[in-house]
Length: 258
Image (tube, rainbow, N blue to C red; front, side, top):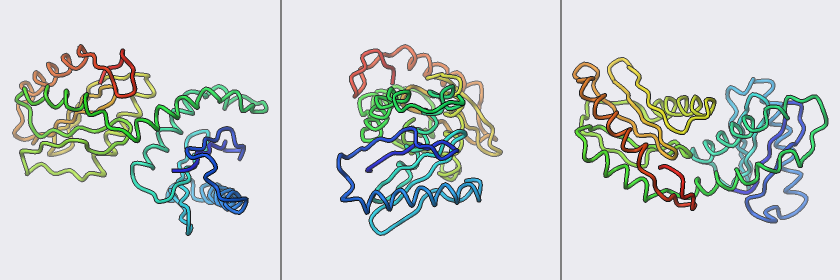
């Protein structure tokens, strides 16, 4: 991962961040990336952002994400799902944090967005790390319950960190699960909530999830055989334990929760 750029829909660069100092080998690299971004914006406008998520070159891959107010670009060596999710999170947080500034009809000043550098560093630290301590604590808590068919997701990476599927008749494609979790996480962000519970009946599968600060704890059950009263009791009990259990996180925030 080399560089992040956030550009307004009018084509104005408002924020950039180099993950690696002096990553570009020369002006040719910078010109190539600038050309890719220009081509990407033109393509996104023509396709309304429906299909293009990355552009590959010999030495670099440019990841793209179109927000409501901005375009996000992440220059990487090779792409993967986690990097796409990181870029999406960055763009969403940037637009939430600077909605007023991005809507203002004035000349943008780079210093208006400098506060986002510390946010980027936090997101990047979470991207590179797994909070093993809190993850193990959550696993210990849920293992003491009667609930089964559990998947634990990271709120920053959106892929499973832990699975315990007992009932093999329950099947849900990973990409669909990720879409559901991501949509619910967007709702949390928009409402500025760090913890919530939700339940969804997905035809034959009953989906119940708890969001903590760093994880989604997901329960899957066969909707035809489930005892919803019993499961809701278990989940509410676990939620109460999680909400009351402080832990020192891996980035040193002593007041954080899971």
